[in-house]
Length: 290
Ligand code: FVH
Image (cartoon, rainbow, N blue to C red; front, side, top):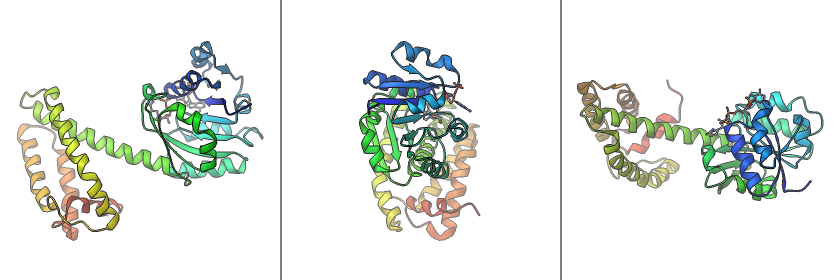
C-alpha cells in the first residue's frame, strides 16, 4: 500500500469524476458506493471494487469521500472499528465550517488525519482545471498533494483551520448567486423590450470585468475598516437603485430583487454610511438582521 493507492467513497456524479481522474493519472483506485452498480464503469476502466466500506478504507492510506452531506459521511464511517487509524481522510462533501471542525475532531479521536475540501467546479472540470480548496493539517496535504493535484490543477491549501474550505465554498456560492441573479434580472428587463439575452451577454461580461477591477481596492477598504468614496458614494448608488426599481415596475418586471438591494443600502445610509463608498455595505453584512 503506497501513496499511489487511493480510495474513493461515494460514486455520484462528482465521485465518479474524482475516481476517473485518479485512474487516468495511474493511481490504484479502490471504489465503494452504496448503489454498487455506479462503480461498474470505473471497474471496467481498472478501479478495484471494495465489498464493504471497511474494506475500501483499509485498501489505501488516502481516503477521499464525496457524498451528499455530512450526515451520510457519518452514517457510513461511524460504524467502522479501527480501520480509520493512520488514514488521511479527505472529505469533499459540501457542508458548513462547524460540520468540518466537528468531523476533524471525530477523525482525530479515531487516529485519522482530516482534510476538509470544497470543489468549486462541476464534474467535467475534475482532472483538468478544477479549483479544489483544502483546509486542515499541512503535513497531510503535502504528503498527498500529487494525488490531490490529479483531481484538479487549481489545488489550494487554505490553512490549518478545518472550517476554511467550507467557508470559502459558501462565500463563493453567495458571489455566484448574486452575480447570476443580477444577470437574470437584467435579461428580464431587456427581454421586456424585446432584447435577446444573447445580445445582453457581451455587455454583461464587460460589466462583470469592470466590477472585477474594483474588488482589490474594496478589499483593502474592508480590511482597513475605512470606506472613502473614490468612485461613487452610497447615496449616489441609492439614487440609481431607485431608477432600477421604477424601470422594473414600469416594464412589469419583478422588482423584488432591486427593492431588496435598496432596502439594504437604505439601512446602511441610515447608519451613517451614505457619504462613503459602496464597500461600507460590509458593515451591514457583518451583523445579523435587526
Ligand atoms: N456535482 C457538482 O457539480 C457539485 C460541485 C460542487 C460540489 N458538489 C458536492 O459534491 C457532493 C456530491 O455531489 P454529487 O454531484 O456527486 O451528488 P450525487 O450524484 O447526488 O451523489 C451523491 C452520493 O452520495 C451517496 N450517498 C448519499 N447518501 C448516502 C448514505 N446515507 N449512505 C451512503 N451513500 C450515500 C450516493 O450514493 P447512491 O445514492 O449512489 O447510493 C452518491 O454516491 C455534494 O456534497 C455536493 O454538494 C458537487
